Amino acid sequence: GAVVSQHPSRVICKSGTSVKIECRSLDFQATTMFWYRQFPKQSLMLMATSNEGSKATYEQGVEKDKFLINHASLTLSTLTVTSAHPEDSSFYICSASLAGNYEQYFGPGTRLTVT
Amino acid sequence: EDQVTQSPEALRLQEGESSSLNCSYTVSGLRGLFWYRQDPGKGPEFLFTLYSAGEEKEKERLKATLTKKESFLHITAPKPEDSATYLCAVQAPGGYNKLIFGAGTRLAVHP
Image (tube, rainbow over all chains, first blue to last red; front, side):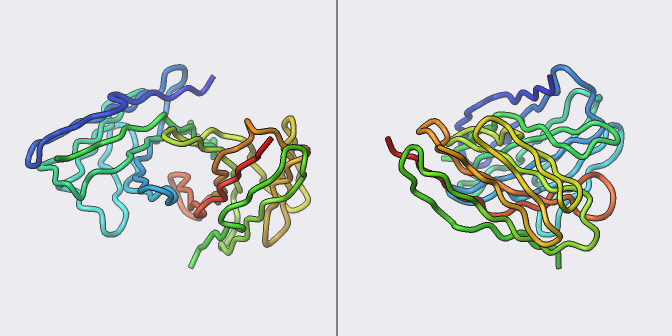
C-alpha cells in the first residue's frame, strides 16, 4: 500500500515553455501533498504544501507564480513550472500523506531538463 | 531554528562490516523522526518512524533508535544492496505534517 506515482518521469523542454508534472496517490486518499526539489547530491528542499481544495502554502523563496500547484482531488496534485529556464532544471519529487498520519510517501520523482 | 544534521556525509563499508549513521536534531516539540532510503534517480523510500525517546524499530539489517537529541540507524552486516543515501527527517511543529530533512549519508558497501 501507500503507492505514489509521478508523471512524466523525465521531461526535456525548451526555455520559455511550461511543463506540468502530475502526482497521484494510487491506493489511498491523500489529504495533503508536498512538492520537493532536489539538486545533485543535495537533500530535499520543500517547495510547497497543498491540501485538497485549497490554495498551496509555499515555502519562503519559492515563487508561487512560477511554480503553480493544483490539488484538485484527494488523489491528484499537479505542479506546473511556468516559463521554464535552465536554472529550473532539477529533480522534482512529490509526496503524499493521510489525514492524521505523519508519514509521507514519496513518488519516484521527475527529472526536468530545460534547454 | 529547527535543524537536522546527519553524519557522516559519506561512509564506505566492507560487506559484513556493521556501522551506525547519526542524525542529530533541534526542534521545538518533536512530533516524529523519519528515516528514508533513497537510491540514485529515485524518490525516497520510507523505512521507519520514531515518536519518542527510547523507541527502537527494526527491519532486516536496519535498526533505528531515538534519544531526545539524536537518532541512530544501525546497519548490521551490510550487503552491497544496502548502498544508498539514507535520509533523516523530523516533523516540524505546526500543521500540514511538514518535514525537515537532513543532508543525508551516502553509504557504499563493497563486496
